[in-house]
Amino acid sequence: MIGFFDSGIGGLTVLAEFRKRFPDFDYAYFGDRANCPYGDREDEEIVDLTERGVERLFREGAEIVILACNTATVHAIRYLQQVRFPEKKILGVTIPGAEKIVESGYRHVGVLATEWTVRIRAYKERVHILDDSVSVHEIAVPELVPLIERGIVGGEEVREILAAKTSQFQNIEALVLGCTHYPLVRKEIESLLPGIEIVDPGEEAAKKFASYLERHPEVEAKISRGGTLRINYSEPT
Ligand code: DGL
Picture 1 (cartoon, protein in one colour):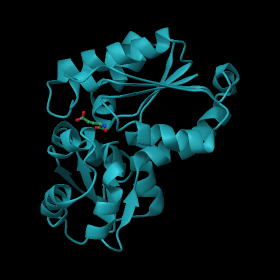
Picture 2: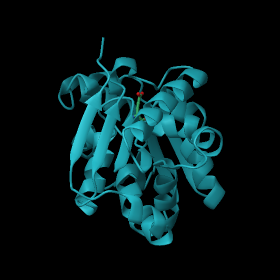
Picture 3: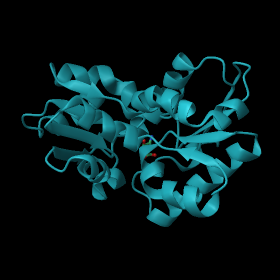
């Protein structure tokens, strides 16, 4: 089974991309809606909550866990991979997103993400490891995740918030949806940025998973296949 972790419902967008490409695997999803949003929490808290969610998915039988959350990925993935679960497989979404930018040859990109992902320059840093001549302009949209969690994915409020942020980008060729909740408002973003390519790191992670499995046939052999899906959330208060 492949486990997916997010602070809320955003990771469902990543899960959907994986299921589209790999429909035969079994899937389990855990969204920590009781503690969402993670975007403006302290570092230790994000690491601790992510660790608990990932542990739960491994306990439920996941052979591999995808951190379907940029905020959790940038704070916790190294600790989880190297210290907490060194014998397990854990993948994130930010590196596939950064790789897509460089592979596509974009020179000027914008990123919309949570407060923390922007504060630690997550995408800029990852893109610059690959090519430090690409200009990366990251902007935080802290208002968006709470709205999306309430099911508000369009309309005036969402549009006004996004318009105020997207109008700050100048001459970008591509925009990265740097939070896995944002594909849920992709239509609004596209209509505000006509002609700009949209990069969805969750989609890129799913595309690259095929080559990951080719490089790790022992992992592929272990993942159970039954096409099942189980979705769980902690209860929002
Ligand atoms: N879906 C998470 C991300 O990709 C979100 C956010 C949050 O809880 O603030 O960053």
